[in-house]
Structures are given as structure tokens and as C-alpha cells.
Length: 310
Image 1 (tube, one colour):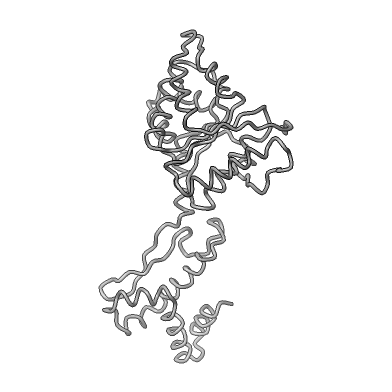
Image 2 (cartoon, rainbow, N blue to C red):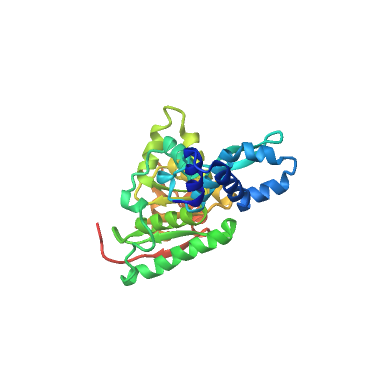
């Protein structure tokens, strides 16, 4: 048992009260965070500290739990997902509680999922890690290295980091690798990323015209720190989807220096051909080229090959 918890238990049981109380106060007062707070708040007298030992005990215990965080699902703190902070309440040491980064990340993702229902991404992708990727297969190595370099550059300088454009045949692991990028960004800096299966998202956007929620849904994709557009080129293209939906998302992200990553069965030229033609308007190469400029110049093209694992 933790020495502090053991002391507190003995106090509660009424054993050696005075001795244990002094020992507990000493343990609490020498904790680095408590000491730092005390130095900044000399107006809190010894009696106030003594009267609020139980609050200090909670503070020290929960900060220790945060330092060895077992994850949000197993958070042992009294208020799950919250970290205690000491505050000076008119000469009395008191506690306030702030959301931890893991809870904030969960809430952001929840707000996003409330607006966008077109994830349609297999669960194994969301649990992907770089360690779980098969690195022996030759056609994957360049893509894995590029993904690792993207994470490194983004963590060092997010506003100057180009996105990735992974192209290749069906089932070679493009989406899974994107899942590993998301996981690494979340682990290292609690960075929010969003992966959207493009064909379903575009279908949903068309349906959102009726309830006037198009702008609200687009806003999420425009502003999320790292956006992954999965299987771009598999959608049925229309001038409105190309220019007003995709074009506006990419324009906003380009202006705000937010990286966008893509997976596709098409390379750049093939995707441009795809964007050029629609049943309604025929061939519109200039407009397709305009969208492609926002993809070509802000991503690194990496071809991924290998065995179809689906």
C-alpha cells in the first residue's frame, strides 16, 4: 500500500493519532507540488494547512495517479478524467478540477461523431499501431517510413508539414497505416485527427442539404488538426461535390496550414481524370486541375504495394 494511504488509513482507525497526523502532514507538505504552491501562497498559515490535510491527501494521491496514468477507462480519481489543482481560497488551500488531455480528446471526438456519421472505418484500423504493421513485406516499407516521418515532422512543426497521399491497389494496408498515424499522434501529443471514408461522407453531405447541416458538417473537416480522406476517387463525382464541398475543405485547410492525408487507388493523374468528368457537366479539366493543385502541392505521393489482405 502507498505510504500516504497507509498513514491515512491508520488515522481513520484512530491509532496513534497525534503521531500519525504529524507524519501525514510532513509527507504532504514535502510533496513537490504542494511545496511549490505553498511558496507562492505565503498567506496560508499552518493552521489552515492542518485543517485541510484531507484535501491535500486527495490532491497528492490523485496527482500521483495522473503521473502513472492507466488510461481514461481505468482512471482511479474521484472525478474520472479530471486532475486536481490547488487554489488559494481566501487563505485556505482548496481544490479545483480540470479536464485531463485524454478526457478532452474523448469529448472532441464525441462532438465530431455527433456531427459526422460517415466514419465507416473497421475497428482494427482505429486500433492500429506501427508495431502491429507487417514490415517485412517489401512494398510497404517506403510507406511506413513516410508515415513515421510525417508524424515526426508534424510534432516538430505542424504548420509546415505536408500531408501524405498513399496510393495503391485494394487491401494493401493504406487505411490501416493511416490508423497507426492517428494512434501515434494521439499518444505523443493528444492530437485530434479524423478519418472519413469519402464515398459515404459525400453521400451524407448530399442528404444534409434537407436539414441545413451541410456547413456544420464541413466545418468539422475544415478545422480538425489532422484530416484523413480515405478512398478518395471511389466516390461518384459531381461538380457541386468537387468544387463546393471538397474544394472548400481543401482551400480552408491550405490557408490555415492544416495537413490533409489521403488514401486512394488512383495516383495524382488518375485522380485528376476522375475529377474531370461528371455525368451532368461532361469534362471539366480546368476545375479538376484546380482541386488537384490543392492536393499535389500539399502532399507527398507514396505508392504502396503488397498482397491484398482483405
